[in-house]
Length: 111
Image (cartoon, rainbow, N blue to C red):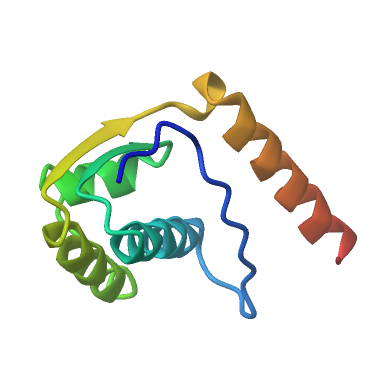
């Protein structure tokens, strides 16, 4: 199976957590979807430089709350034959930037 499209996948959190935890949760949800769809080749473009560098092994995972998410993401990645991981600055990703601004405004409004 091959997809050349962006697949939107909304989710909500029921508790307060750091931005990095949210990044890992979003990543693992998408990786779970990819494995369920039996995708064997995957290109990941992510705006969190920390998460990308941790996945690539360039950065060490030091925060205890990120260790389980990182381990789970790595296990999910092992089930995909060919994976490419690239950092995309948020300024270069208009869709992600718009969604981040929307989420921030909803949080500010107490929605």
